[in-house]
Length: 352
Image 1 (tube, one colour):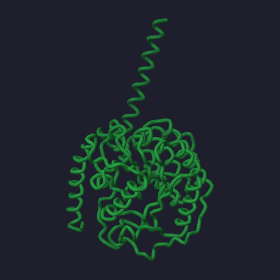
Image 2 (image 1 turned 90 degrees about the vertical axis):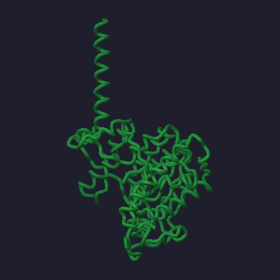
Image 3 (image 1 turned 180 degrees about the vertical axis):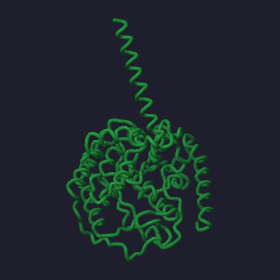
Image 4 (image 1 turned 120 degrees about the vertical axis):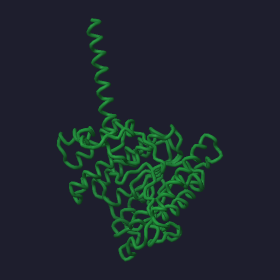
């Protein structure tokens, strides 16, 4: 009997060690995403988390918000988030940090980011799935997300295995030991493009005007929006949905925004519609945008100020600059300034 118990214990230990090795090896061979830095933060040290896509991480500079307003924030973003990823992101954010406010960008719904979108080719599908899964920790939610992504793509059992375990996907990648525990520090706190646009990113003739009309979502997107709202209702943090002050190429995107805004407010949540604030913010399309819906560093500084004033005046986010518990952020800010300086020098004086 004792021998059986001993063998059982050895077997359990073996399984645990195997899973530990598989998980952490897979972290080391994943591609880097900004989610990784989120897991390096001190426990419960962030008051505001922005959740979204590259639209968001190009818009908000957490380090500038810290220096100017004492806001402690992080951009929990990837280049692309699927609509159904957002609900799992909400849960992961609260599980990891328990912030006061979570700002959720609705951009995925405006651009039809769901995995079943037939307008994407196979290479884009693979890349976008990578953005959604890389750096997410192994939790039950991650497994659920894999299943939903695979179902949307009408994948088979082999596809499930392919996305559940990263080693199968990334067995040819170079091992990066800095990614061992999935928590490599990101001094930008999730900010994206430090590049400065050198003029003429697009023409205003390529943009649409908001005429107030509404464009309902397709059946799958509506299902995911309903699930996102239901999940937001279970979150202790104040969840605020928003639309960034970007340009749109067509009226359909504006129509979706107006439709979603109505659905969100009907559900009792705040919707911060910044899409009409371009002139108020003082954004210049020739110098402040990296593309039609992404900001460069100059534009992000303006948008960060606008967002920060909203967070302070409308949501009561505190100023932590005199709180000794957050003094380490002053050192991080110095590192951030050095990083900004490096990029400005690289841009050959284009920074203002």
